[in-house]
Amino acid sequence: MKIRVITYNIHRAIGMDRRFQPERIIRVLADHDADIVLLQEVDKGVPRSREMDMAKNIAETLGYTEFVAGYNVNLRRGQYGNVTLSRHPIIRDRNIDLTVLNNKARGCQHTTIELPGSGSKPIFLEVFNLHLGLSPLERQRQAGILFRSREFQSIGEQAPCIIGGDFNDWLSRLRAFFVEGMAMTCATDRETNFRTRPIKTYPSFAPRGGLDRIYFRGGLRLENAIACRHQVAKVASDHLPIIVDFELRI
Image 1: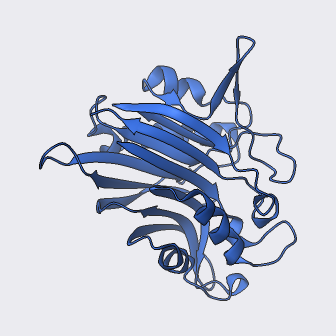
Image 2 (image 1 turned 90 degrees about the vertical axis):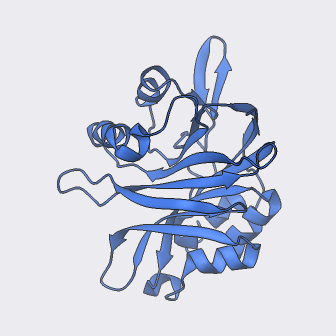
């Protein structure tokens, strides 16, 4: 079974030209038509985004019948956080609080997505959609919170699992936590001259850092991973989206 996943920090649909234009985000997502979309920095009821319920608007426009939101930051008016869209049933979801001390509120949205299996037996894909903090120590602690969470602990190593989002990990310091510690593979790494380099996604108009990543394990085979380079994506947000194609071998 083929599965396409996108992770995209949409920056509240406020582009590099400082214009709020969600139609640009929708156009980018429509161009790639993913089965599962992981979005970060999605507003609901916030004046800067015309008090729009952005998750609902994007999902309905693109025809995603399944979507859930994990709002981590409460503003004076409205909220924002992570949103997961799926073309397959979402049978369970929970927002994991990754806030460290008095730092900005952060979270990881866990969803269990039911995929068609062989015969009448479905396959359950565990998906974690996160947005980590700005300091290295904060990110390390947040990774620890995630790995110790009951949602992650309850998943066997052979179960199909994806962790994606905005890691804010400029120097790839978290890579060992995921790859060596949790037996995951980074879909968004590139091997060049015996060195590992992430696909660059930030800033969108001239990417220098690989902040947006997808890790995976358990019956998933990586087929392809790219950053979107469509002209509209360079201005629609301050991040480029990452598009990853998997084959589910179970």
